[in-house]
Image (cartoon, rainbow, N blue to C red; front, side, top):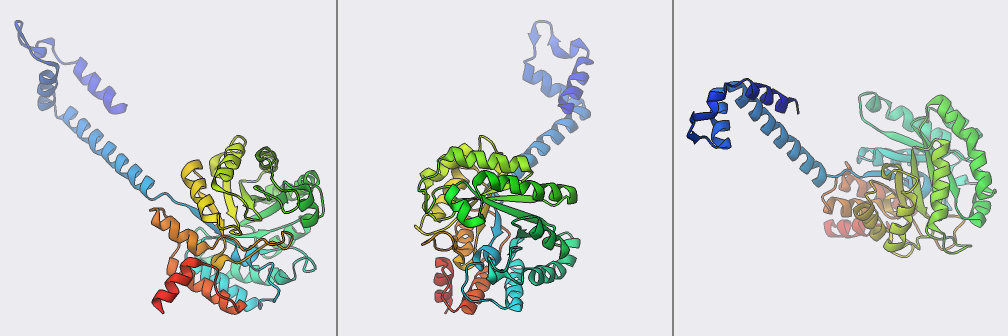
Length: 374
């Protein structure tokens, strides 16, 4: 716009006899413009700058479209290990998490600050988080954007997280199913929102980003189908509490692409697309298809996943693990999208923890590639 104004200003000062060779032989508009440009280096320079600037912008936009970035939130250390029957030694957990971050996982849900009576598998939450925060402090200070997140059920859990420096992000979790909410966090859906007010207040005072999880967004093991409007209503309440991101969880993995899109469209009536993350379990083998639909049809750019397909839900009988991060990365990279994660190193981390647990990885990509290499 600035360049256009300069050209107009210059043209307005050109003598009128420049517009014609002879009164009876007028020049065309193009000929007049060409003559003026050739005789005025200022206009020539402006046009060249405008052309190359717009070309550069176009090229950058094309590259960004070709390399859309998808943020992966690796939930294996928390959501993956919380339901394990055997206790994973603290040094092993720390080594596992370090492998994930070394692989390029910059958003890691490290642990959950809940009572050991509720989740004994994560009773060492303070020790694990403290060590991870210390280990990666220098790289974070040097500019690497690593977000070490943790789940906090209440103010007590939040206080414990703060004590060990876990202040990158904390997450609260609720459900749109009354029955599931009572079994999971021992309160009604509306009571859960009331409980979160105190947590929200402290996070705002301490300037700690707050993330919100919603369980059973596509189905409940006790109540069956869930209305998309119920999910949107709960998401709106979490946003009002100050959550910067809402993770929508298909806890029992019953969702299909059609149902996923319908639910997302309803949630997008109350939330910006950038505020929404998707979290799929792969019980019915629909997780990758649902993620694909979320990204390509609804523009979602944040995906939760768990390396080696770790996880499940202690309150949802028959719910298998989360979608495997390796499988998600393989698909996204195949779509020409950017994640910043090294697939080979990620597979190594998944095989490491699978060996510790004494079972094969649940990642189809990891199985295929490791067999091929072997």
